[in-house]
Length: 152
Image 1 (tube, helix red, strand yellow):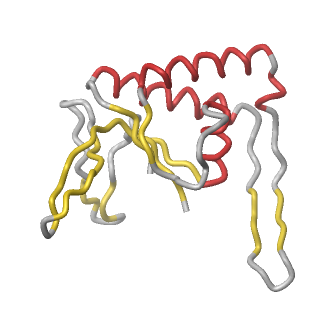
Image 2 (cartoon, one colour; image 1 turned 120 degrees about the horizontal axis):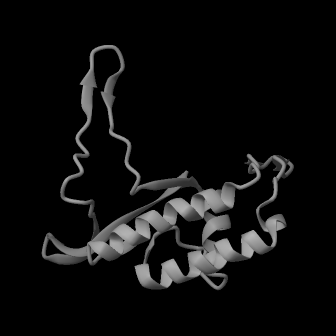
């Protein structure tokens, strides 16, 4: 499972007379997100700097440092770009002052008797700062487009 961050906006859709709130991706007007069809490899999607996909465990690492009181029972929501940019700036400054906040995390695995096995892949040194910098780019684009940062 994974969670993806992207610039977007909220919309409404009516299905069978019931109104739903939906999220729409919102990329710069000159970005063509249509894949090309390579004869050998099939569909190849363009590099998209405005989309960040994280495993659920890495999502928790990133979102909980930005929003320590976030409800982690839901892996979807929306963030205001201005607030997010302030939090990212503060976190990157903290990491610069205390690099141990972004140190190597060794892989782990644990299982309950007869239960599922949970695997933590670990993180390389600098992973958190790298992902926060990518998220900053998404928040800046969402702000330029007058939208939100959506994650789901």
